[in-house]
Length: 439
Image 1: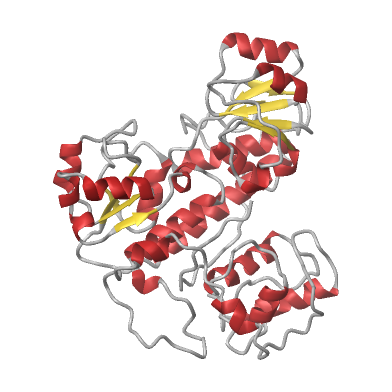
Image 2 (image 1 turned 135 degrees about the vertical axis):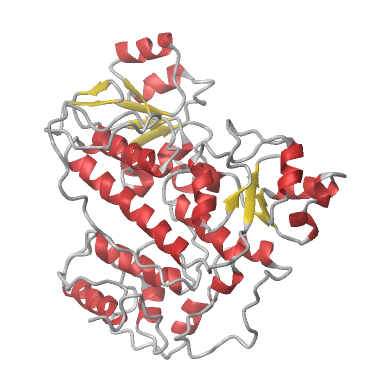
């Protein structure tokens, strides 16, 4: 599942650290993410492992997910190859070939049992009779609720990692991934311009008061993007319309359908965001999914609310914009925020000015090894997109260095070094990273 990131001219420092000093001694992994009452800690063994009071005896080789968000988490962890089935609402393009089994609320038990998965992941609890029927068929059901805070976000990941790859290996991999993603969001937030006037925003699911409320992780995404969620004190996804009109947010994020309804509503059309053209189209899955999509959501919102951060090229580009950045978004802000990334950077890089030393058709990705990887790592180090010495192994640090470069170069941030990436990386105006000049 390649996530399209709308590049900001942000010097995002993608730092990678492992959580030091994790205490052992647990028979299970972490805690129920709905409580966030304890810091996740690894188990003493890989399997058997207990996650959310469910025992998983061995590493599953076949998994069915009944949750789009959990599918997104598995993809972020690079565990999506374990998936052999999905619910109908898991509509990610990369999962389209998987057979469907209905939805968590309307589950086709026969189809599910035909797939013979070892593990079913769901956010919504199944009925006792369904769980028993699946257990009798040798299928384990694991309920994992969505994250609501930073702490439960990490627990969500460590629970899924432990269930799928073991209480030590999976836990550690997932914990590192979750921490890295949160640090990336922190780095974006630190680059939000300081202001004496707070920016307010909300995400509307409809025009009847369904909104991102303060008891969800999506509310934290709004804050990461540099705004105060006007529905932050509301709960359970509902806000009184009278409270919405009173709070009168500077920005409203919503689907294109809701945007049209806002414009046609006699009362809501008078909101400041509607009047000022600051209703930004943003599909709801960007707020609901909790895999790498969270980076896209925050990047999109920050870019829309702080257009001075948005740039199709870096300061180091040989061509500077002829128009100064405005402190207010242009009339096309909402369109820009919901469009796909520009290809201008890769086109410019491949116009013949690049000194790309690799043969055409070269592709490098996570897990690759060899001299080409060493050369790639050296270039990333020279430009300040990583801080680690070359090892010849395309590890997660290298992948994130590539993604950092892609972020800043207005490219799809998929972490894969292909022709377009390599051309841009070796172009004379290659974007420099946050570690440039620190060595």
